[in-house]
Length: 321
Length: 284
Image (cartoon, rainbow over all chains, first blue to last red):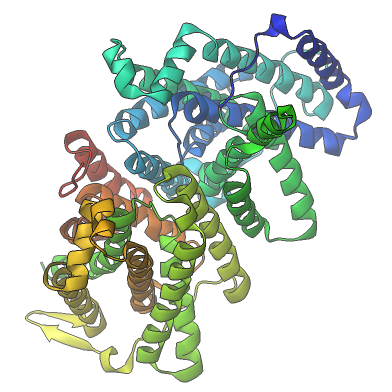
């Protein structure tokens, strides 16, 4: 769980960020539409993983059902766009609002408990939503899902059905969201969350309302996950019960653990790696689920603190004489 | 009236299957503080292995024995070679069992295919019996009987045997139990195997009435969780009461609100959490 260095003390971080931003802007001219689609998926899942990192890495709450908020927002956005014809500026907030409400309700229940109960309850609640998405055919289309969700119409000369303008659309929204997340974890509120992660009793003794901090963090994480879900439904133009399934929750959890919880950038990299890896594996075999399981076991055994943890260990080792 | 009685009996027999599942989940948690997400897989593997044995030999009894014992061995190996490395580390243990859940789910899909399959009932319980005014399949009564027998045996094991006393000592204070010369490490493996055994038993017994199909692992895991959330983790009594409550609610829910079947178990779970976050019989 490393703290990111303040940006002014590390000039090479600023230079690296600038180069990264320029590369991100140039990508549509470097990649084919197919690979650009893959990058869009990476960006969306990076946002999704960062939202979960707010819970795991900064608040110390490991949710096993984070796909619930991603999926609820995706369904809400898909439904209002399809059935009511709402445009993106209404549909996106509608999806995030649904995610916030779901997070507010589930948070009330899950935060009643701690430890293993919290893990169980988050997983159980998300599976209840999956059951509803699967069973309530008249609203959700059951396992057929909702096809033909239109891409957003921004009223610009470029149609977002083309991946290049859509990529910039996703990049801007995810970029703003990532900026907000970084601001949140580096604010006094974010430091209080770290305090809760390290010792609830100490924070209580210091006069902090621990429950309220956890609850706000839980709802915030739901909203950002929901935003990722909204973007993903526009990207795929489709939403199905898979969006809410425990496998989706497991994937995003692995992204966070693989990247290294508590760094935001780690989970984002973890997300890009898993999306890329899934793409490669799926091209060769249908056994992605099994591969996912093995990656889980291997990461837990050999890199329990993720890639950022490995980097730290490596630095420590090379710093020793 | 008769329809109600039949639905209630269906709920109780399903509740007994959930009890078999939740009892293991609860025992394992009580002793080792491991939240075993692979528990649903034991149920699924039990069903599939049982199915294979029944098709090969035609013997239901042999199917029960082979499936339960082989899955118990799988459980023991998981505990001995993987989970033990992370003793009392909640998140790594949960992640490991999460990984195994997917490995077993995909393995089962690979070996046995994606189509739902039904297990033939054992011949001795292939007919229906007259219960007062209703005719009821004897196989479901057999499941209720097995559930009660297992419940009594587990209770006797915990309260009445030396091994049970060791188990209780391990639950209460692991270090003191070790200091007293109790082989707690062996106890861990045995209890894990017992939990897997019970889940696989549920899988085989459930085969003829629920079918054996991909996704059953996730489904029963969810229901098992709801059972222990309601009953309380680590409590045998909680597993039984919770199993019956969830079995009945699930059954009546599917009858009356087929589109919102899961909602009928969600509401009582939410109520319990609001009033008693550690469940009816759980202890903090």
